Length: 159
Length: 159
DNA sequence: CTAGCTAAGTCTTGAAATGGAACTGGGTCA
DNA sequence: TGACCCAGTTCCATTTCAAGACTTAGCTAG
Image 1 (cartoon, chains in turn purple, cyan, blue, yellow):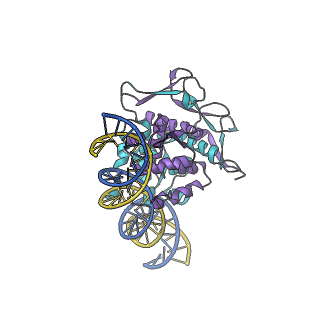
Image 2 (tube, chains in turn cyan, orange, brown, yellow):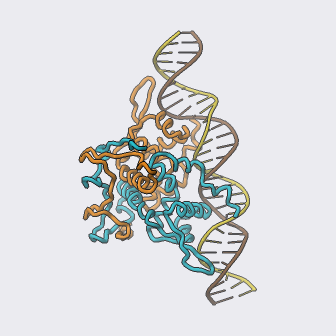
């Protein structure tokens, strides 16, 4: 239990958390090099420490720390899949599943701008309609595709 | 011009770049604590070094490095807005604007899970339809909202 | 002409995070 | 008994980061 020093997940991340900006707050949870890759694995059904570690080549101490942080934030939950010895797995919670649009938006961007000749590395199929697809970002009110130039931002009066 | 040592943008980020995974590639460009905040500012129409620096409180050397990286990747472009003395501003390119869905997905997640009592910090209005909105992630083929559990993934045959 | 100002960096230094690899500890397998 | 598995911990050298003073080039006010 001599983890005290390093465990205190960086002051600066906590500063992010307390900013009045949803992006900053989101980044305080998932905004580092490894966390999103851990989540990628989680969405690909990886659940165990060893598997995350092998797939990613991440330093074990860093993995420990990231998983703990995600559990703390309620993005993953730690679930014992056997006693003697106790072994845990990490599963996405609903809050974690809610990150899907963010992950897919990044995957899409990579597909569009960094795919090599053979096309994107992964193909996604929508079981509901049976087609290969990519995600599209639309307006909750009119359903049209959103162009950033067609958006106006203002501070919430109350805040 | 004694920047040589630090300028070589970390080996590990280049490793990410060369992985056969669109998320990894995307992260090699925007996957660090500060870059996404820089982009937030850019989407809020900030264009100058000094303004990024003041708004974010980011270390100047780090800002220099991040802006250079984003320019190198074609996400921002550096544009002289005056000669004598030469002064530059950083503008989002189309490739940069394409990151909007990713940014908004994260903002949405923050709005949903970390808004405080008064509601989310910023309100977004869709000029096209005139309503306040949030983004919704839909399937390019059937137009329905995408549930991660309804998606199957497979490697692209060619890759 | 000199001091001060601005924008956009650049340099230095100490603190923190990371990568890598070995070690721990409960428990199974042969 | 010895080898192996999983899920961490610990240690150490290397890398990255934060903070802020310093630089450069060209104004501008006195």
